[in-house]
Length: 123
Image (cartoon, rainbow, N blue to C red; front, side):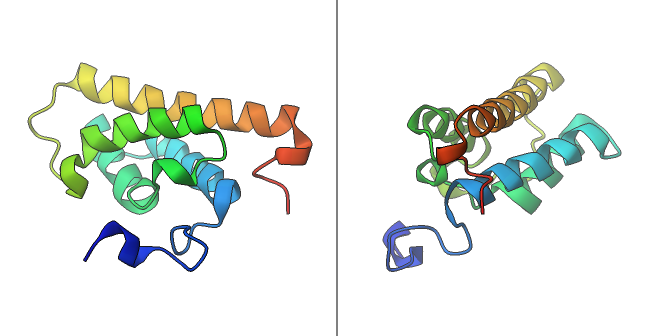
């Protein structure tokens, strides 16, 4: 099955309706990272598998954030295969990835607030 097989008729990912769901998923992931229990490795794995695994760079309403997300996705799921255990990584590497996820969410939320006409949070 190709990546195109799991796209809807308009070319978007199923279940992801543009920037609003993308921002909501990032928000939920940051809450898991910040408020979850256990070591960072467990919280990052939970955030990725519960909220972020389905996000694609093209789901972001701002291309530069999509590029940044693509880099994280390649780290956590090279060749579209998630590294579930995260065992080979050091805590400082995981911390960098978690910080980048939070930074992307912060930037998306900032942009949404500064440009209400293009806000991914608007109904």
